[in-house]
Every structure is written in structure tokens, then in C-alpha cells.
Length: 453
Image 1 (spheres, rainbow, N blue to C red):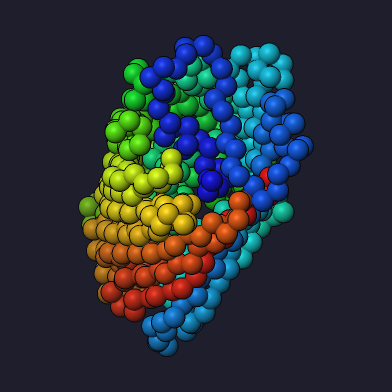
Image 2: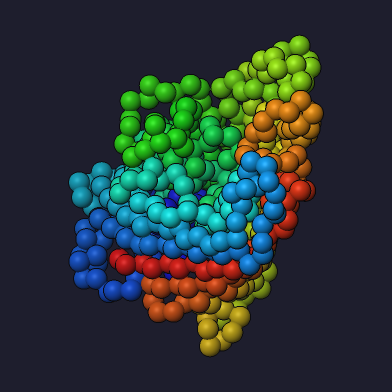
């Protein structure tokens, strides 16, 4: 009902094989969210293997607290204000089994257009967007997110995909994350994309992924994703249609496994996943120079590491079930731990509660609460302390030493009519930009999602 365009890969990962399923090769069902218009053309196309979706997500946030005042560069630009950001998106899935008789083969393509800005930068935060839909779209009318083919074999027990892909749509992913608006949580917990070498929606690289299910409720998946320099930069990927690979500088190799039990006669699903990935591209140390000193003091070249890594543990479990099939209280928790020598975020932990259908008269409404806590890597903190001693500029748009931060959100999603969801929300930033010298910030806002077809 409330699956945004782009959530299909994470939905497939989160769907275990039914106990009575066939081993026959076939294409899994495409995403079919309810829309504001019952469209006969969509039904006709879907029956013939074409699934075409169009939606809009809009996110508004306004600060109700004043920013930190100051006369130094950075502080002068802080202001109490509001922002609006959004995305219109189109998705095309083609079942080539229906179109041309190619058993188990489908292709997937998404394009987006993004607009607006985000409020968090007005009070000095550059780590966690108040509106997740901000950024990455290239400021163009049509931006290609991904375009790839997937072969599904043995009734879903083996799936192989290749093409232009968003790695974090398959790995460390969940369709539950975007029940929220803030960018520390929605899309994926921000710590998983601590490096610009990770391809996360709406960015993509060439990629290959294989996923197997040795038993119905367990999957193991891995892949190889070439690292493209400047993946989030306009000069390389403004439209997303640059395919030549001339800027490939290495590869990312993720590995993930999960147990997906369903308790109490199918009413209490859960997902328990563990993963890690390695980045082959050399990266700078976040504190030491070539000779073991602080490069902020010595002004020498930072030490190079030949590779870096990231790990994650994520779980969600429905604890209570109400009346409707998809209703109930679900808990989420997880932790992401990055290479402390190269990362900005050493680790991130999160937790959330999603409560759908609590009121019998509003079976599709959802209440949510989420928090993320981010710890900045020790090397970054020490480097910034040394930079202040020598009068050097601070990285990451910082106006003070970065240590830790927390972002919280509470919301209530209202199903207005079929295909329209309106979500008033409250966000609270503790130590914006992980800086103790910035005031905490409170924001009120809303998120709307309209599924046109």
C-alpha cells in the first residue's frame, strides 16, 4: 500500500519462499501498489508483462528552534527556516517470459526527477538530511536510477542480476526504512553509505549480484560493483546515463545472509540479516600522515590504506498482529560498524517502532518512532582538534569538532484515499553535524506520497 517506487529490490529480499512453492522457473510478481486512479490501461499492460508505475513523494520540514548564532564563517549563514524537497518517479518492469517466452527473465528500470532543498543545512547539519528525497538527482528533468536484467530460477531459489544497479537497494536494505522521512534512517541508515564508493539510490554503477536460498527462510547473496569515482557528483553522473566506465577506480564486494522466519501462522514475519563489504580502492587515513604523525599538524600527505570495509547487523520483527493482514506492531534495530581508520562515521546504531492498524476504524494508518545514534571516528575528532590548534580549515562543513549525534523522528501516516498517504511528523537533532557547539534543533513537517498509476 505504501511502497515507494524503488523499494521493489528490498521487497523481494524481504520475501521468503512459501513452504508449498514450486521449483518451476518463473518471474516473481511485480510491485503493484494501490493508485488513486483505477487505470484499465495499466491492468491491460500488466497482463501482458509490462508494469508501469508513476508516483510523487514530497517532503517538507521547518525548524521551530533558532540556530546557533556566531560571527565566524559558517555561523553567519545559519538561519531558522523551512524547506521542501521531493521526487517524481517512473518505474518500468518487463516480464520477458510473457513478452518473448524467456523463462524467468525480467528487466527493471527507474527514472526520477528531484527538486527542492533540505532544512538541516540551515542550522549547520551536513550529516543527516531532514528530507531524504533531497540530492543525487543531478538537477535534471530525467535522471536514470537503475536499469538491469534479472534471471530468477528454481522458483526463486536462485536469482542472478546484472546491469546498472544500486548496490544498497539489495544489500543492507529494508522496505520499512522509508516509513520515515529523515535521511539518517530513510532509504537506508546513513552509516552504510559513509563512503562515496557505495552505490545507493538514486545512484548506480555497473554491477553483478547473485542470491541463493538454500532453505525457504534463509538467503545468501553476494556481488561485485565497480567503484566509479564521483558517483554522486554532477560532473560524472548528472543524468545517470553515462555508461562508459572510464571513471572506474576499484570495486566493492558485499556479502549478506539473513534468516527470515514467519511465526504464529504467518502473522509475525521477521528478518535477521548480517553483512559485510570490502572496498578495494585506496583511501586516506582519517588522522595519520605517512610517518605516523597527525597530518593536520605536519601538513604532510595522509597515510594511504589499500582497502577499507564496512559491516552491518539489521533485524526487524513483528511483535503483535491486529486484524488486517499487514497490521501490527513491528520493532527494528541494527548496527553498522565501519573501518575506523578511513571512515567518518565509526558506527551507527538505530531502533524504531512501526504500529499499523491499531485503531479498527483506521486499519491502514501507521504510527512510527525512530532514532539513530552516530559516533564519529576517533581519528576524525582528533584531526579536527589539531586543525583548530593550527588554524586550519575543518572538513565536512564542520564549524566545531565532530564527536556524536542523534536524530529522532515521530510520525503518523494517514491513508487519505487509495493511493494517497499524508504523514505529519516531528524531527529532533541532538548535536547537529555531530558538534557539541551547535544547538539542538526541532522541526515540524510532513511527507506525502501519491501513487498515480
